[in-house]
Length: 331
Image (cartoon, rainbow, N blue to C red):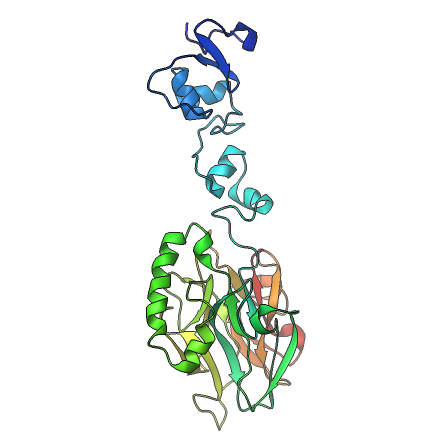
């Protein structure tokens, strides 16, 4: 008879002799070649059982799923901890949002300049040089203050930046560190104007504005806002700063149309943020500001319907503010 069988369902009082009670089960006092931790794999070894067999006897042991008896990985990540707590990763992350592997809350936002909780610039939204003003709602410098309506005239470039949290605090850390090094090298070759937009942090963020989505930023969430070409259009009429081509390490100013795409990292087959018409909702409930627009004009963009429903499609919003494009993110 093994130590595991010794109690015959009578608990600790029947575990004696060469056996001891540990982790809710009877195991050998002096096992050979077994780890010493009070975890499913160690205790299963001491009991001369498989981990699955041990978990059926003591399902609440660390490393066992409480209901299924399956063994869980032991890393301190959302995937392993969710398994140990018999939860889905989403359920675990809702309760423990800072756990490794969980998406960040409010990964990106719109600000006059990046900083604070959102130090990484993913580019600058459209500035309408030939209009009387460029309007948007965003946080102030260094992502401080309140997210409110802001207006700039045509005498100085004044448009919101896409500002994001660093992605290096997640399971993407190895990839993020390699990308950070590439970004630092690319900064040395940028123009002074472009570098001023992207110099808040050389670490990679969760989303970027790009010519098209690719590389680490393969999930499209929509596009920035723009106007049709007018008779006086030139490449600076509706200018923005984006990462070149498929979200490479190089950035430059460009004129719309065409607009830049909002490109995000892939997490659970969804982008971290979307462009939505008029309101946020669904899996993207966090309203992070209104993209730049020219007062009294109909703006063009690609994105999702109200409350982030439907699919990514070409849309027209304005002059009614309730139909303008918003940056909506996961929370």
